[in-house]
Amino acid sequence: MLKQEILDAVEAELFSIYAVNTVDEALELLTGEVVGILDAEGNVVENSVNYKAICRLKEISELSDDEKEESES
Image (cartoon, rainbow, N blue to C red; front, side, top):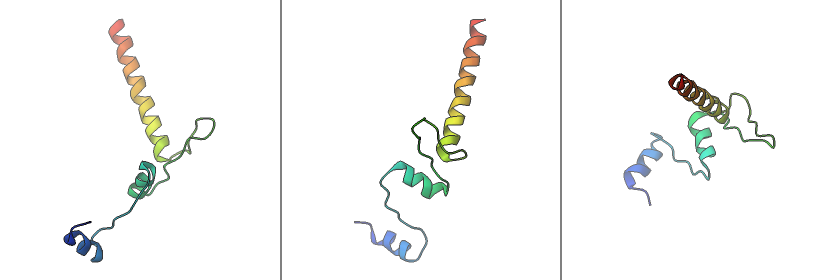
C-alpha cells in the first residue's frame, strides 16, 4: 500500500500514478510519443521512440567502427 502522503499528493493532483504492463507503455506515458513496434520486416514507425533509439545506436556503432579503422591504420 502507498503511504498516506503519496495518496494525499495524488488527490491534490500534484502528480499521477499509472499502472503499466510493459516498458513500451511507460515510455509512451512519459514521452507522449508513439513507441513503435517492430513489424514483420523489422521496421518501426519513423519518428517513434524506438526508431530514434535505433538510429542513434547505428550512429554510435558507426563511430566505433571508424575508431577501429583509424587505430588499425
